[in-house]
Length: 124
Image 1 (cartoon, rainbow, N blue to C red):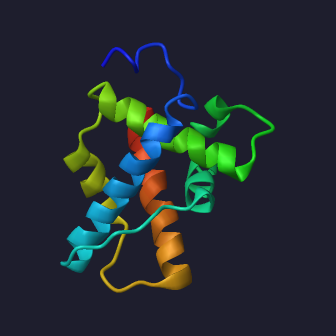
Image 2: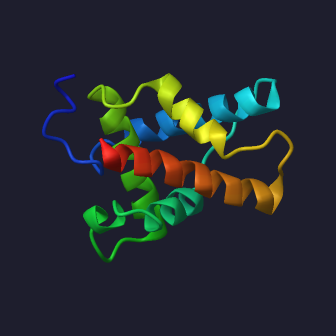
């Protein structure tokens, strides 16, 4: 994908946003056994990023929204360049999710799920 080459995660965040939401929705659907559609908040993504060594790469003086965008772009970049497949990402996310969590419990599970995905990306 030529439009990805040489682009940073921030440049790819707009296209990474729907991919990230799709991956999360697919993971939730897998663990709950029925179709689910959910958006991932910048809070979840930024908190997950802050727990990984990738946080250093994002730069300083970034808002929670900027950090969320960075994660979305990073996920898209790694998928587009073939380093992580959709099925692999969904499986990693699903490992940290349960079938019945809601509210605050779902938020903490989601943070852990994206932390695991980001740690996997960092290991590539």
